[in-house]
Amino acid sequence: MKSDSSINLSDFMTCLLGDIIQSTPTYQHIDMNRILVCSAYNRNSRGGAIFAKVVPLRFEDGMPLKKFKNHWYAFPKIMNNDHEILYLLYFYIPRYFDLPVYEKLNVAFHELYHINPEFNGDVRRMGGYKFSHGYSKEHFNNHFKDEVDVYYDRIKNTSLATMLSMNFSDITKYFETVYARTMKVPKPQKIQEDN
Image 1: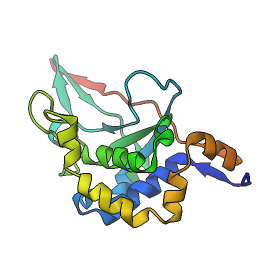
Image 2: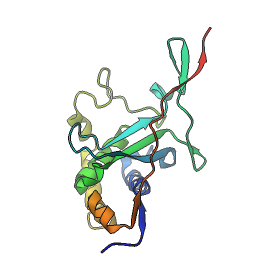
Image 3: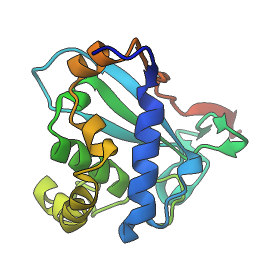
Image 4: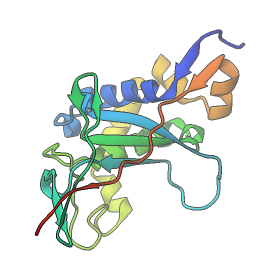
């Protein structure tokens, strides 16, 4: 049966991430007010299996400026509800929403784990050469696997799990209007030149 209501998938994901942060000790350092959840559209089901990504809005160690070839660069300032945003978190439509419930949660936990423990606008750095995931993505995922299990057990009989169990086709059939926040990924901008 089709509902006459609408759903903003970015707002839904913001609520989900907020609930994960509030109930998971590993993520207590994260301030959801300074993360903006967006969506990107990717209808190609083949190729690299990217379901989501986190985009930091600061450079290494949370530095607001970076020098490259005698130029200083900064990310554009993004404000939302009077808060300066430090991270953008993108979920791919429909690919992310077509995952099973547990995998949706695993991807959400994975992206949150990329956020620096100092919550300084930089990503968590796992080592030198492959700083994003360290030497393996499996090892990266093992850092929060038990917490995904605990969270899944806590919500599996709730309305949140019911919503997560819907694939993108189900969502568009159930809701009258389905939309999401989109934003082009910001790039660092040149702000001054050294003489």
